[in-house]
Length: 160
Image 1 (tube, helix red, strand yellow):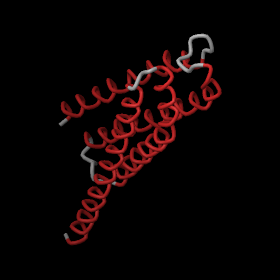
Image 2 (cartoon, rainbow, N blue to C red; image 1 turned 90 degrees about the vertical axis):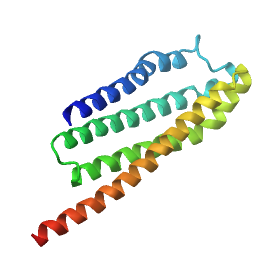
Image 3 (cartoon, rainbow, N blue to C red; image 1 turned 90 degrees about the horizontal axis):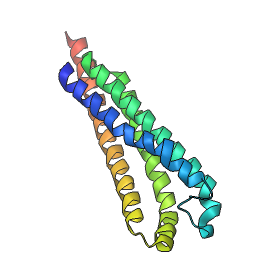
């Protein structure tokens, strides 16, 4: 089991590395006034956009940490515990926060796409929105499943 979870932990770290690179190199480019992708028409959105991007990146990294924590619980054979339910709750909450932010930002992305004549920006925003929504729903289903398994486990412990 540890080999599979090690692979998943490495995959989680691999997923986090491009987001970290964007936080270190992409967002400061948006912040810079001379090389910003936002034109002068949308320059007043620069600071709220930067704050929102860093908040969603923080939520993303919290969710990744909780995923690694959940994989550690699986390694210890404690997958069906309250700690795993808490980790899934945090992952679900982070995914909902990311979804809400991208729903709020889609009109700004549309404006940027109109100015820059780049409709792919909207597609990227929609992919992030739908992916985080799917993750939130999946985490909610797993949370419900884990709670049910914990109840069955506690009933079996009381029976014996």
